[in-house]
Length: 137
Image (tube, rainbow, N blue to C red; front, side, top):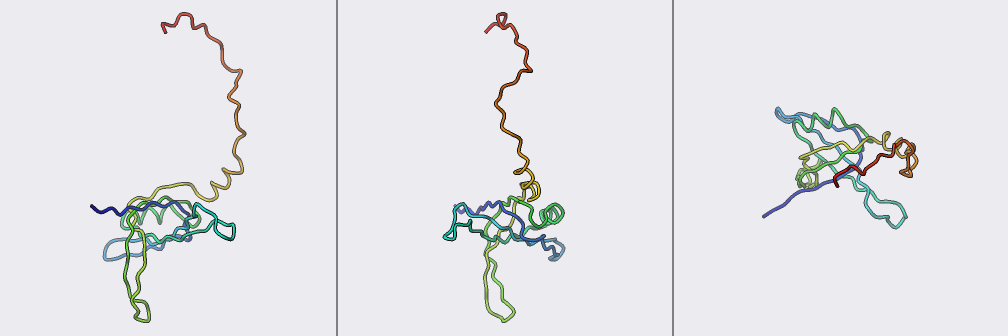
């Protein structure tokens, strides 16, 4: 049995670059994913994950997501081999997207954090006391 499934939540580094391969649209984009721990310099380290989205997902990401937007990506890890401009063989890792989901934009996140309502005590004087002696339980 083999399993190849990756999930990431991060922010788009730039708008997706869309091109056509044959008759199929493909979008390439990179997301910045903060690590869960703080590095030596006391700052959270960030990984930059390359993502490829084909066909309908390509249209979806190019229409609805832009630089700075938070996105959830689920897909499979692929190794792509290619030759660079000097003719040297290279390889790169990228995620072939299977699903893309909204998480909110940076502007929404920032405004939500700054305008959170005060915590409620859970008490309210707007309720009317009712007689429960007639209830069968």
